[in-house]
Figure 1: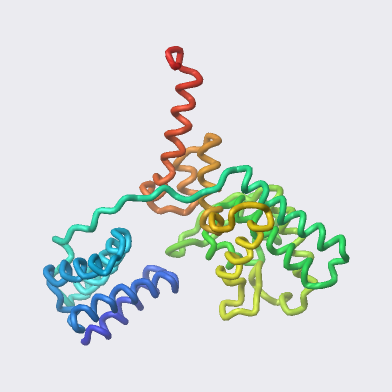
Figure 2: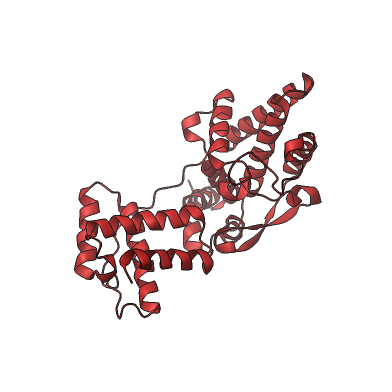
Length: 308
């Protein structure tokens, strides 16, 4: 079996057995094809020295430590697959240390900035409705308001948000179940404001004949059948600019971080935030511990009898 055939078998396994998304599969393919090209097509036969040489090469090419670690992780998964399938008797990545990387603090937004963003989306929807609501402006404003309210209320990944099924809004319940990474399901809340925004969006959506039969909450004329995440990201940045919020600092992922950070600032438990975000490991959620540290320091400063 050639290296190419083994790579395809590995990607098929990651899709069928691990439920890897298209984006994850594309990242694995890029990383492994990069390593294979460096090794002259001998990736499946690589030894530990080859792996280290590849890591040294991408370091010289200017890849950040985080990118180097991701590429090594892709190699580890690939060689573990080959070992499990009996195609190798060893794992050459077993003795290779991952590049040290500093975990940056997540970019987030202040609560007042999120409030301005949501208020602007609601005002634009109201203005479009007051002007008659017959043209494309009203449903577009309705959709954007519903997207922003729902994202901040739930902390969903943008890929989860744009692909939500229509049934989520039809039930009009305080909680719904979302299927996230690895096909894992979790329960997330839906605030009163988000439910109201979705209800108005449903009414506007129902008046669009092309969308009536779509199973998606946010349908679109795309290959996936739902709103592309890149389109939502562009609309969100444009909304930020109109709301007086620096657009360069705003993205769907930043709003997800804001959801988590604001929960912790207001007393939520780190484990609860882990479950809401869909993190499989608490270590992933611990990027938000700086929020807890600030809160605890303020708590001691305010209540300890010997505090300054």
